[in-house]
Image (cartoon, rainbow, N blue to C red; front, side, top):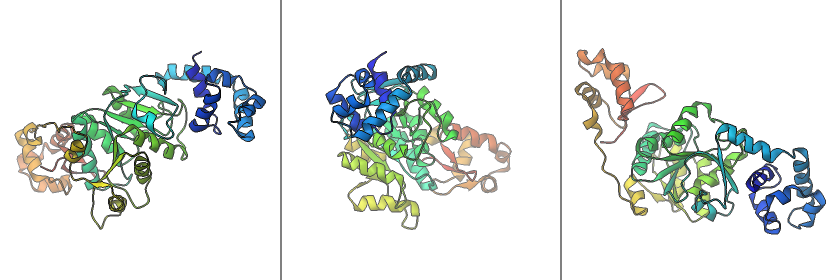
Amino acid sequence: MEDRWYLAALLRCPQVGSVRMQRLQSVCPAAKDIWSMTAAELRATGVLTDAAADALARHIQGDPNLPERIAEDCRRADVSMVTMENECYPLVLREIFDPPLVLYYRGTLLPDARRIGIVGARKFSGYGEAAALEFAEHLAAAGVTVVSGAARGIDTRAHRGALRGGRTVAVLGCGVDIAYPPENRRLLTEIVAADGAVLSEYAPGTQPLPMFFPARNRIISGLAEGVLVVEAARRSGSLITAEMALSEGREVYAIPGSIYSPQSGGCHNLIRAGARLVESPREILEEMHLVAQPRRSARAQLTPDEAHVYQVLSFDHALTMDEIIDSLPVSTTTSLPLLLLQMQLKGVIIENEMHAYRRAERN
């Protein structure tokens, strides 16, 4: 049994996080040897408190076959696992104060990829949705891997936008064999299929718990050269990710919003505190010394009937199907549902939760 599986099993003890484990390994480098220690031997290292040493000993004695079970669970779920010593472990993640000692993942993990985190509100506006899709797509098309948390709202839109242009990585607060939220199961599958990755520091089978998500946020910021906050209320989990990025010396970008929107308050506070206000993906790419890739105009992808529908729609305001019908020739309205579906598949329009439609791009 490889030493990494013993390390993974040790980290399943709630009282022993990555910082304590690093200190313990500075005294006893082999995780397999730590796994064989008694409570007295763990206390004798001088690294753990008596309570933590006793808890770890109970953890080991309570499930002595845990390393083998974790390895088997990963094999059955087609999940890979790396430690910090593995060459696949992301380079920039090693630099943070509390890097995860193990990473479980499905898909393709590139250690030296250029990455930007994109986070935001679960309850978003049409403006925020459009910005997340646009920035993620353009950044991905320029070779930047978009990192987000696969949560409802802006995170999901960031992953969707990135898939149009390139790669994306989803960082979960649960095992990578669990789809959370459940409606993103297909999205996570698409991310893996598109040479992206779904990753977590939690072993397969670990259920999502509130305490896991702040820890998940440090991985999002730790993987990225910078973090873009699209929309966030004044008190938002997205701001935790931004604060973690700042604490690690990473760039923080924020998109300004309406002064009347509660989803803009967090971004505006970040800008006041020194985050860089950005209005286009090009500004981030310039900061990263990358060049935006020329993209084919949305209009060039349209059939004549689709062009009629596109002309009626705008970027700023979504229209219901009835409103679209009122503005179209009768000959086009009979095939409108099919036209709208085709245009969504081409990525030129977006349907919101109210089944209203708008352009996906500003031009």
